[in-house]
Amino acid sequence: MEYLSQLQQAFENLPIEEALKKTVALFPAGTVKFSTSLGQEDQVLTDIIARNKIGVNIFTIDTGRLFNETYETWEKTEARYKIRIQPYFPQAEAVQNMVSEKGINLFYESVENRQTCCGIRKVEPLNRALQGTTVWITGLRASQNDHRKSIPMVEWLPDKKMYKINPLLHWSYEEILDYIKKNNVPYNPLHDKGFISIGCAPCTRAIEPGEDPRAGRWWWEASHKECGLHLVK
Image (cartoon, rainbow, N blue to C red; front, side):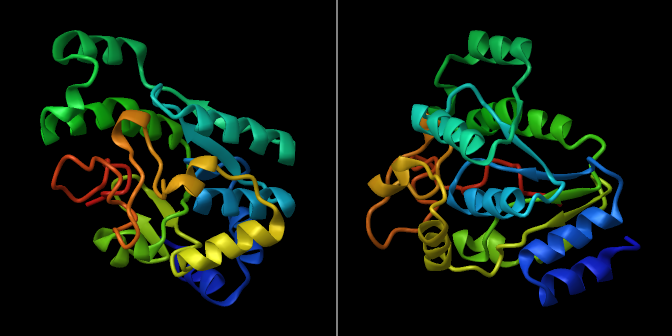
C-alpha cells in the first residue's frame, strides 16, 4: 500500500495520461495492466494509452460467446493503434464439463447457473490475466450501477495484492461519447442500436430510453447486474 497516496493524488490532480505515465514509472515494466471489454469507456482508455504511448499492457477476456461486432471492434482497434490486445480464454475442459452437465444456455435457468458460467468464462481467465500484476486499470464509471457508485478511483485490493485504478470513474456518459466523437475512436456499432453495456451475446440486449445502463445485462433475473469481475470483498 506504500504508493496508495501517490496514486490517489496523481489521479485527482493530473490529466489521465500524465497520471498513467506516473503510475507506469512507479512499478516494474509490464506489471501495469488494463482490462478492456472493448466497450465505449474502455475504448476511451485504449485511445489515451495508445495515443500517448504509455507502457500499459492491454488485455481482454474472450468468453467464446461475444458478439461478432465485438470481434470486429477488437480488430479495428488493433489496426488503428498498431497494438496487440492480449486475449485470455476460459479453460476448455471447464467449459466442456459445464456445458455437458448443465447445457449450453444454463444461465437462463438460475442466478446460480449464470454465476457459474461467468466464473468459468470470465472470472477464472481474469485471475490468470492478473497474475504478476501490480496495478489493474479499468474503465468503470460510478454512474453505471449502484455498486459502482461506492468504489474509489484508486484502491488497494488486499486479496489480489494489487492496486486497482478507475480513471474514468467520475466521467459522465456524455463525456465518454464526446471524447469518442472528437478523437474518432473506433467503437462497437451495437452501441448505436441501444446496447450500452455489452457482454456475451446471449446475456445482453438493447435497453429502452430511460432504463438503467446495466438493464440490458442478464435482463431475465433480478440481481446486482455484476458478473463477479468487480465484486471484490
